Image (cartoon, rainbow, N blue to C red; front, side, top):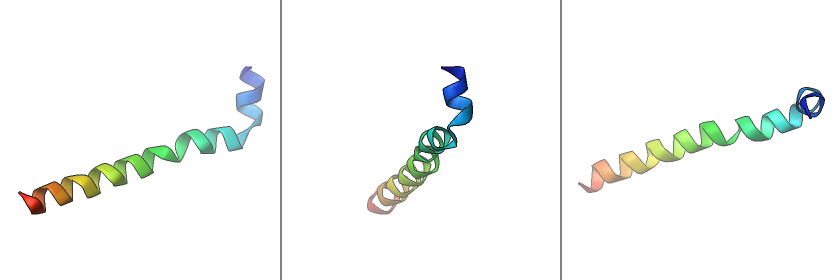
Length: 37
């Protein structure tokens, strides 16, 4: 199992990609809420 994670950069990429997307989504949501309120 550890070898699979280390030898599969795509797995790391798939896990790492949602983080900035999630943060950006939160930022956009907060901006929308601030504008509406």
